[in-house]
Amino acid sequence: MHHFPLTVCDVLKRKHFGHVEIIAGNRGLNRTVKWVHILEVTDIKSLLKGNELILSTGLGWREDESLFTSFLEELIEIQAAALCIDMTRQPFSISPRIISLANEHHFPVLLFQEEVPYVEITQDIHSYLINKQYQMIRDLECYSQILNKKLLSVRSYEEIVELLHEHTGHAVLFQMEETEILFPTGACIKPNTQRTLQQCIRLFGQDYAQLYLFGNRDVTEYDNLMLDRTATAIAQFLLRDLFVAEKRRVEESEWVHSWLAGEYEEREIDDILCSHRIVATKGGTVCVSKFQGADADFTYYKLLFRTIFEQFGFFSLCTEKRNELSVILLNQREGKVKQRLEQALERLLQTDFMRKQKYAFFVGIGKFVEFLDEFPKALRTAKETIKIQQVMQSDCRFYEDMHMYRLLSMYKHEDLQEIVMEYLEPVIWYDQKYKGKLIETLRVYLACHGSKQETAKKLFVVRQTLYHRITKLEQLLGEDFMKPNKRLVIEFMLQAYDYLLTTKRMKTYEKSL
Figure 1 (cartoon, rainbow, N blue to C red):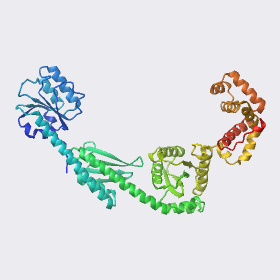
Figure 2 (figure 1 turned 45 degrees about the horizontal axis):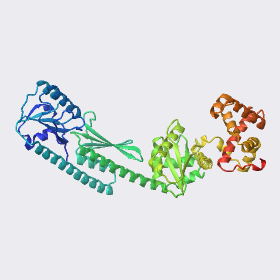
Figure 3 (figure 1 turned 90 degrees about the horizontal axis):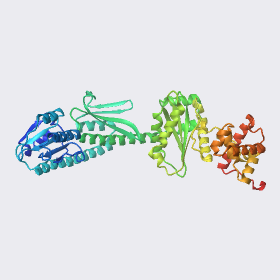
Figure 4 (figure 1 turned 120 degrees about the horizontal axis):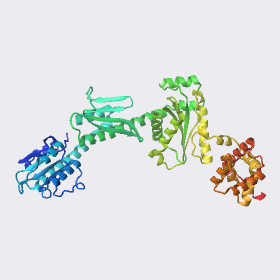
């Protein structure tokens, strides 16, 4: 059923408009009427929302042409449907200027030549509009039920697209990546000349496909609502298909696990990828995701992960074990690999699904490798990244950004503490005994490359205080502590000291105080 909007032309066919004279705006009779208002005041901007049929006797403006002009201009600006004036009680003349203004904007001005109760007009039109809205809701509910039944048996989204065409009579176009479906087949589409409605189909917070209606006549609010319901149905169908495909991939992921375990050689991996029609010629890496505190169901997360990373040029192959998911990311684009990985990961972490996670979550991206048989190394470095994150409580998610922490994690804590104390014990001892800030001063002084002015500024101390602290550091560490070789070691020891403090492995030396 088609639900065309009520127009001024339709209103003229109703019983109360049998003796109406159209004095202006004949070309605007197709204007939509959404409501009826009786108005006698001239300040109307706050009273109207657009598409109202205005009934008036002209009491407030009929004797003042400038006031009438201002009133008409406001109606045009607000995009009212038409102005109806009762001329039966106190007739008055309407100047050619008013008529010209209305004609210029195709705004209908109607004159009642016989008395008609305005209350009956409002009751008649409002009843019609309300009944029409109720019928539209019923028809829309009926269409929704047809869609739901269709979803139980449909095998392709083409059937859903065709259903929309059958119920609207409009040409329908569905676009998804390189797929394009048009009903009726061979229809001539002219986007610049036809009225067009567009609905984006979103999955996992991302634009996944587009659905269009191309109207040979004016598209209606009902068409728009049907388009929205159809887009939702297609989204449900696509999501169901993705879940089924993901479950199938889980069954086929054993070889991915064997690959990451280092059980295949380069040629064997290449043959398997070719058999799955997967192109892998530009290297890649491994991303490990770990949820703590629960045995996670990764199905939805994998769909979300795969959808986002594919948009940034990475093909995903997954394998999971308890609460840990390992994803091989095969790079399929040239250039800016790190930047694309960062952007994809950031978009993943900003999704509602990730924000609502109740359990601790870690993700690490390993070393980028060029050859297929090197991906086990990428897996090891991704897991090492997560381990460092957990120990250091760091939010760094890329192995190549770990820098010094990669070296620190290789030491035993006892050996590392012994080396740290060998270099920093006098300063640590001094701060503990006198509640000083020499460690902080040393860290900032080194970061500022020995600039006293910049160091004082960052520490918020006067230079005299800084000079005193530097003198004390020279006494404790030696006057040569800023020489390149020794300075490099001290900077490393400061990093190690922070590492031990964070892991709560740094012993205090109260006995030395």
